[in-house]
Length: 236
Image (cartoon, rainbow, N blue to C red; front, side):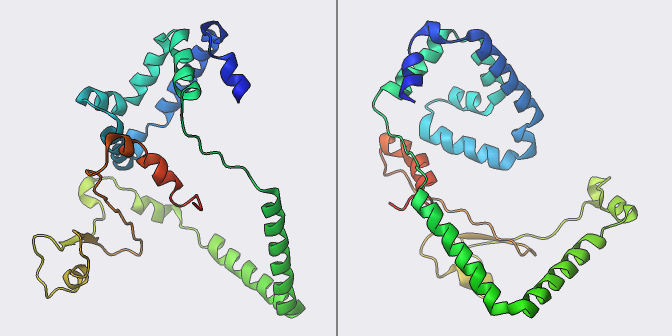
């Protein structure tokens, strides 16, 4: 890595023809996978968070949202722009999180898994293993043979917006007052912070937690994204 950085500190080290080709490929990929159309809610949510953390003006937000135009603009940047990025982010003081796989841990996990399988094999015995094999075959058969026919698939296609299958969403909050007699409202009373539940007939649950960062400095907020990424990955 150090050698790569050192080799790209100078402007003449950059193959601008190659860079133009790579940027062109990035434009094609962006056109083929337009995230703002396929996943606008998640994409906009991410843009707004990064805007609050790093941007200073409304123009910065417009630039961030219009990713395609930003990528196209990179084509006109000179070699000094790219060498400047290397100097700014790789030679200046910075923090890097490097994960190094542990050969000892890989061997330990493999041995534990091998021992677990052998223990399970001894526990089941020949008859038990044969029974499990039959259960798996039956499950695979049941899952694969009951495929929907063309007539059913045709019924599921939404041809008119009025015929779209909708379901009710019951919104309740412990702020501003839902009737306390309702079960969901009673459930919300136990939380000491503002909580809102959108209840719908589904078995899936999605949880969003908002934390007040107004007490953090601008420098501390800049580290929030790294902290969020490490939260469930680092033992520290």
